[in-house]
Structures are given as C-alpha cells and as structure tokens.
Picture (cartoon, rainbow, N blue to C red):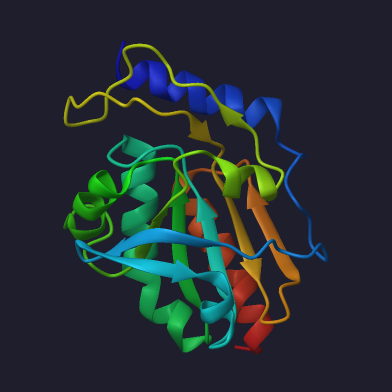
Length: 191
C-alpha cells in the first residue's frame, strides 16, 4: 500500500464527513500544540495568533503526501497575500513533531514560510468536528516513509479574532482550498 491507499483514505474521509465540520458563526475551539516553523519546534497557541488578527487553521491528512505537499506549497506561496489581509496561517495534522520539523522546512512544501502543528491524538481535529480516520496499514508518504498515524479530513477554517469562524472550506482540491481561504480572508479585511 502506498500513495493510492492514502488517496483512497482521504477521499473516503471527504465523502464521509463533508458537512460535519464546524460552520460559519460557530466558535472555534482554542488550542495549544507543538508546532514547527522552518524546521524549528515551538509551542503554537491559537489565542496568541488571534491576538494579532484572523488565523487560517487548515487541517490536512499527512505531511509529505502529494495533496498535502501541494496545499502547503500553495499556502507558502500565498503567505504574503494572507499577511496583507491581516491573517496568519497554521496547518494541523496528526503527524509527530519530528516529521513536521522536516515538512515545515521542506522547499517543496512549507518552504519555511508557515507553521504546522502536531495533533498526534486527533483531539484538535475532533474539537472542530472533523472526522479522524484510523491509521492505514502499510501507508507510506511520497518519500517512501511509513505513515503510522490516522488522518484528519482536509478542511480549512478562517477564524476571526473573537474566535468566530468566518468561513469553513472543505471538499475542494488542495489549491482550490487555499484560494477559497484567501478569498474569505480578503472579504474580512475588505481587500
């Protein structure tokens, strides 16, 4: 099993829970988690992020899988546009911090431009009403490394400083997901 298995698991997640996520107007759960930026671990706090403006919290299945690398790269390439609209970005997956240290620094993924947080037990994803699947036996990433954790569905939340969800984006391709999140942030800022 490999990339096809991961793609099948991701498709099943999307189909099974396309409408389960928290919606616009709901209150976003606060969280603190181990995270990495440019290969350096730190503690990420949503509360601290929101003190500076809206936060785009995007959940993705696993680091170094094709769709997740595409999405991370798209967020990294658009980071300045998000910042111009006053928003920061944090990715969240069930990956351990060691994988995220590599992923956050990888030039083909996060490129050292965005933080990614570890939700190893899926608690954060579940608090956002996202489905978390069990690990897939034999699943490997695009580098051939074993993936030994479950998968959260690919869903992005635009969270306003008062912790109200301004937009929930799911059921789209990785690049379309990023574009819709950017449009939501730009609407918030009036740009």
